[in-house]
Length: 210
Ligand code: GLN
Image (tube, rainbow, N blue to C red; front, side, top):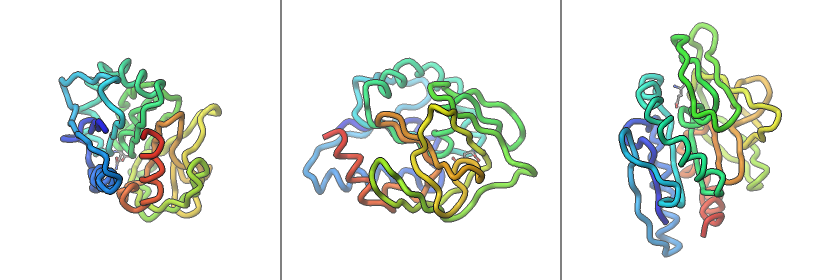
């Protein structure tokens, strides 16, 4: 299993690297070998070199640092997604897969524009913070996590949410959607880390690619 930790040295809020620790723990139990690389600023990302791409969350500051480099990786990331690679993007990473993100200071950060969702900020620099519980139809699981985001994300009509909010705020605190899913790409606001707190989900996503 070839794992890419996208900007792993920059985007890693609230222990998001724990997703990779949980993922690798499950792989070990299944007897599957793995190799993890950090692909960061200036590094080449090649779609065919990886089975799983993990893109963690970030502070507004780190998101603004990676945004230009990210655009250079757009075509290969798009190819990876269309080829049904397993891609998990959390919070800041999820925001950057969409059209744009207006950060807490009202600055616009252009996203990859691979997906149609967009993210605006909240009134008075408010944040959605706390425990969150969602129903995930694709994997038939109820998942738990922790959210902490200033952004409010809205999906387009042709995007499917990853989950439906049972408790907490999710994408925007209004429409009960949480994250999005397309082929084997998941964007979600759930820190936790989500794969450590939801073992079944972790095993089920590994099974997609083995
Ligand atoms: N900076 C973004 C926000 O506040 C993402 C936060 C995160 O990744 N935890 O919405």
